[in-house]
Length: 226
Ligand code: DX5
Ligand code: ZN
Picture (cartoon, rainbow, N blue to C red):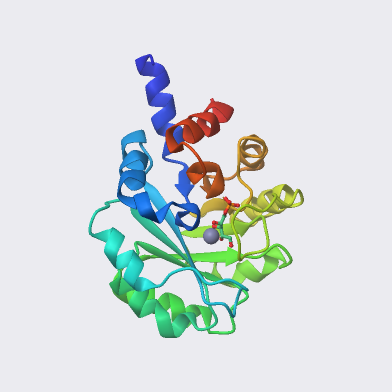
């Protein structure tokens, strides 16, 4: 690979946010090292409680364990009924950013207060059926918005096509604020270009990164954006 090509690849890898949900936990150490070698800087961590979404993933103990061996930016996505109760545990486990759903029943500003006290980044996640205006009250407080482009709960679902317009609408709403827009769900080599054109800054990708050969998968995703 030429130097120019390598630089381009690294630049795009910085915009990938692989989702741990699809990782092979038997080989997690190698997988995370491979990501870092390729120039990936962050890891998306899906927390599901079987109530907010009909699936269970992992808790703070798992994050604490992988924190010991990885210096990736840990982007924790809470899909749980009681974020206020659990945020301190996910901060303690080593999250660099925590995102709560705008649909949560808990008080979003109180969730953010806990993150501010700990000095970590704050994010909001918006589900497919929720209107973008729900984000408005929090825009001056957040570092990132995660646009769900599938119904939250499972990896490996297909990208909902109307998400592209939603990304554009959110980009307009955000204006010149320093807020990262990332897209979560159904990101793969067939959809990443469209998502990029809609204005996403980052791409959360689970199955498209971890299923099969990670290096080959990432090269294929990156090629779409070159
Ligand atoms: C779904 C999760 C996603 C999931 C994406 O609720 O929020 O982060 O891991 O998986 P893929 O990339 O396979 O659609
Ligand atoms: Zn997620």
